Image (cartoon, rainbow over all chains, first blue to last red; front, side):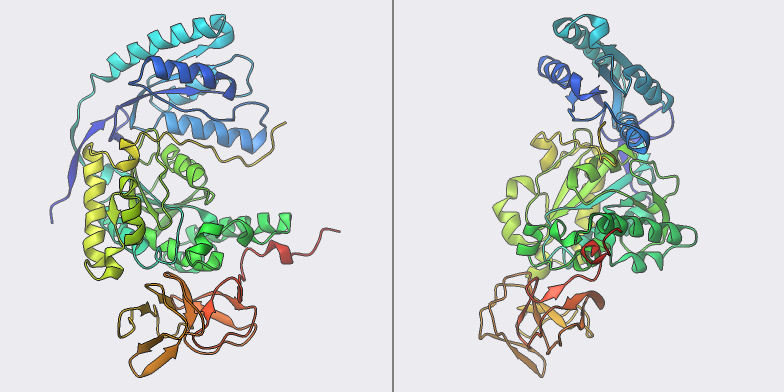
Length: 387
Length: 100
């Protein structure tokens, strides 16, 4: 079988984008309003807002900054405008330097330096328009599927997730890996109880690192004296038939397919290996999505049983329904129906091939439902308190 | 993956203690896996599980051939298996000893 290709944006550092966005990013929540207004005046840019960037310390601050820098430097972004306030912990110029160090075209403006809100908006609009003109020079060229990092995610899971959509996505994941690409399996709390199956497919020290991260998840539950089941599986997961975190995990792990686990990553870190990798993210859908895209994922496949509409501002998110009833009820939000597997109308392999086809199509520019609907969900996983 | 004879339920691995309802099943309905017939003692919503044999209190419960929890109450054949009679064995920080 010849290797699959797609038409992507080859960046200077060799990475390949499947979109060519200009991103306007606040370095701190105090710049959210200015960023939002710039986005309304220049609708061709994508904007995000968030409640982070100030009064953070240590590993929590480092993770927030790393996530912003990785997200902004994702190859799906052609250029970035950082908007800061001026007095924030997450200094906008230092953030812009970090983004530039990752090979990204970046400009930075600050509200206190510009003088006031209105003047910052005017400056931001002018810079955003310049960056759009610059970015428009990029053209799609033929690229191999081996250049793709595919994020996998499940949200609003139900009793069908581990029977239909997740195994079908696993089949597609194996195809991506067979082409030389990279697949991220994440949401560590949703691997608790299934870690031994993944570790058995890993060499040392990868297996040991996986066990350490799983232990870290359970240590957090011990420190809080809580049963994870109070929040995960969620109430909707339970209504859908999932009883314990172990059961949810065993179904969730299928997303990664059957290949060797090559690497275990911290949140928002970029994979250094091809093949299947695990990233430490929470099961919380949007923090996970943001973490994987900050790690360089250009395309995400998201399975859902209850019906989760979420989408990323800079990466296509392909939705796979676990059951036909929800697929039909939420047709607008769904791209693939894996419920056909238990209906007996399609095989797991057929649905897996459809998902793989969608990954390549999305890389070529086809917009899945969440992108058509304009979702811009963005959230950074916090690992410490604000001070 | 053995399906029940009429396709209404799925037992993922032979060693599993539970099967998954692929459609809403009513109390009193019977589900047949070859020579084995299971009468449902309660309603089982689509995607939920029922016991394919009796499960004693405290016994580990398997699905996918793996442990998904343990029985927090005795469970009869054909009974709905869910949060009311199964507890997790992992992520149980509530069982950790209180800090001194």
